[in-house]
Length: 63
Ligand code: FES
Image 1 (cartoon, rainbow, N blue to C red):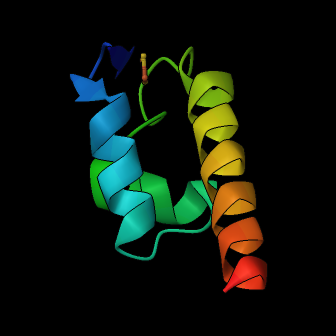
Image 2 (cartoon, rainbow, N blue to C red):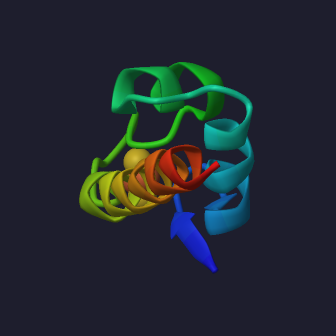
């Protein structure tokens, strides 16, 4: 599903960036340009980032 229409960035693109180390919106913006034009995707991108980082933290604690 497209998250950022301005730059054709999908949820999978954001997930891949987080898996490669992006941990903040600033880092996501630097890597993907997400939320760098109209800004309507900011909250969606933040939600994905938060969900993924929380899940990674839980997985790391379980390991
Ligand atoms: S939808 Fe992402 S910057 Fe416009």
